[in-house]
Length: 457
Image (cartoon, rainbow, N blue to C red; front, side, top):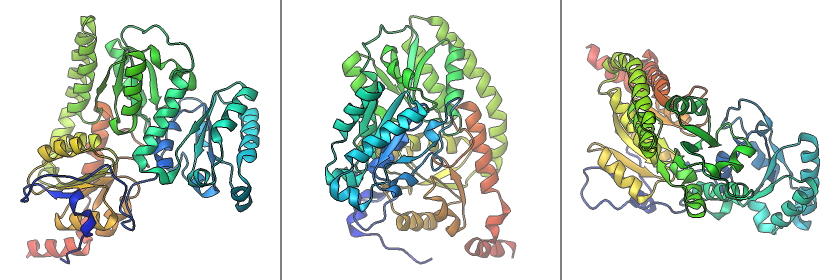
């Protein structure tokens, strides 16, 4: 097999467990120019967090090309309004760039708010807006006075940093909305779910669990979200952070401003889902009935899942998986879930992991596993081939890599239509992995076919 070289400047962001030398992952920095990073830009990061708020207007202030990042690239399901599915842009032209786009932004906002009557409006600043210096804050303040709804700037100029900086810009915008009304009296036995975006209906599954436990969900930020729910978020007793990379900044601001503590959880896999529910139940220890209801719920749900997992495990035992995800916290859950169905992880990478995240990954992974930060297609292809992976788990940008290499792929991010959270989500995940890995089509791939022919002889 032909070995692919790796850029020297990238060597400190790649580690193979068991290799000589200290584990010193370089992370949380801008992507190397020319490396074609799998990361998205700051603007993309802000959109991921904010646009599941379904009854808000989402207006992109910039060239029309930025508006290609719409709901349909990363779906967020709504049980009611569908305004978030519409992609609006001020469509700045060369003339606007020369003379400024503030008047165009104001006119667009007044027209759209008048037509669609949203509960709030988020204005996304793109690269070109940061360069020409439009005073977006002033325009938002003026239009808010004219229309009477919150009009919130999102400072997500793409050149400012990485996708992670977009998360921070979105959290700042959300906090702007949360702190507008007077701080409410905290509700007993209540939580906010932060960092759940309802891509495949996960929000509804998770809320159902908490309802069965006797815990009230004040708001989900931002899956199937509503503006008025976000404004009530300061009344919760606890913030439960699901996607830690995207919304921990918001949780910390709410803790400082309102004294609301937060915990980090995951709802992927039976182990982490159970742990998440028990953590919340333990927080409300003054209500012992919650813990008892949680025990009954977990026991009932696990008993439903285990028989099916035992069946697929027989076919998947010893198969190898590569995974590359946005936040490293998701990678932790994936490794546990894959272990539950008998698969080994040979590559684990993330776009926005921290040094602490990668240390946890190192401890979780078996010797020989490659750990990557902010990888590019060439590196991913190199290690997937070298480790002879049977499955690649990633997002929309990793799918072509997997299929070109002739291995199965499971979408754990943008384009999927089925929920992967909770106990039923684990069944969906195991079923998809099993059907993908055991498909006979992979035996026809040239490099696999050679191996199969040798075994047959």
